[in-house]
Image (cartoon, rainbow, N blue to C red; front, side):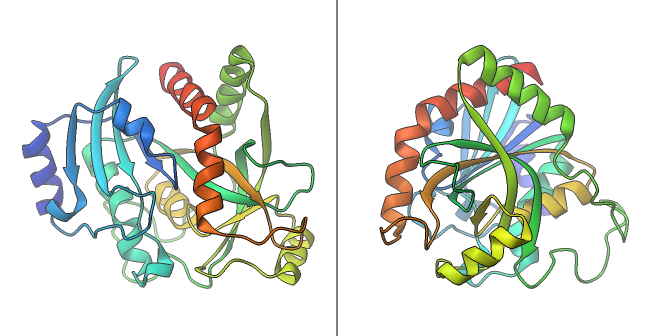
Length: 266
């Protein structure tokens, strides 16, 4: 990890970000608008290149509303064939760079029938249904303890802060539990009914491994889902990645406005 951190610090002249953001499918435009320094994942030692449409694959550094921010313009996913350790490696790197607060964003399918496409949902908790855990294997004591507490992964104070920002902007927010599946296939109607019974409000294929590792590294986490579609079995339409991108494009204006306000308030 040292060679990764040293390379980034050399390229950014020791930028030392305090806030980290991982931008999900269709949400990377925020980094385009706030970009002082950009490094392609392919240039960074031990980083892997994103292969998913809507993910540019750049590490972007910027000063936003007086805060030093590093953004992942696209993430890597378990379903791409990467290991859990590989997809969460950038979170550990962010910690070593100085990040104390991590904002995780994603596009998600609505399980809660009261949610509508283009809604923004604050993640209050998660369910790891991916069949594995990114903390498996030898423990790095310089990052965190072997058995991290998971009772408040998504910090209540950050959720309250985001709600205040949204209220000032006149943006309606949902709140709920995010369930992560491995993908890449979308869920069946039966699996969505199961998710609802388990207490999930939205489903997706990311975020949870990153949240686990960030919590392990003692970073404060805020999660925001852009509800891109009704999940399988809710309504009559079929699901596609193009639909996900289309809907996130519709909601990106309020997403960017909210994110900017949250950064200023942290």
